Length: 306
Image (tube, rainbow, N blue to C red):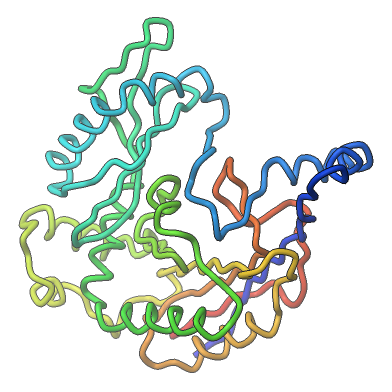
């Protein structure tokens, strides 16, 4: 077991909105940075993905909303044909050169990812037959979902750990509704997502086995993957947690406890773990809790659990 790094990102506390006559005074005295924070950041407890936007996507966003049903139907057909997997389309957002479509695989293998739909903004037209995906994005997402099936016991232990943790300490994860609408990070839970693309040989093999037989059982999948020999440094777990209450700074003791627990657990998946602890706010535009002016304390390290 080697300790290599723990990443702790602590976010700037956003002042609460005042009410009544004090509101006008605040607008006069607040700095541009404070005003930006007040208008952009919301409590993670309330965030459901509303307000999410992409750079230069304003022109195509109305088309995404107007044509949503047609976009969803075409995207579902695309994933069923190309990846042998049923998906639910939760959101479609205008992008600079098209429309980004956020999808979830609600059944195993579970994952969140996206596809792109070409659009003619001048004509208000979409091109359902020309859907495309970014290289390796869906493949990584699919592999992550398959890994969660193969390592079912280990992932269940990790999930149960976080559920018990938030019951005991003043922290929360991201709402499932927000994940569905704005996250495209592959196998994603309210507390973490995984990045397994560096396991290139295993990715290609397991995905090929699944695409040849989408009804393959977990038991048979496990015959193609040795959970005791894969390179733990190539399987990344990124943990994002938030303080449960407004105006409370991220607690370094909690992050240190997380590190100790994961490091000493023999039952969670082997991998490279990175931890982020944010304050209670999240950007409604990007769905990200980290901020440029975040407070950072402690060593910027993460751990390799092997």
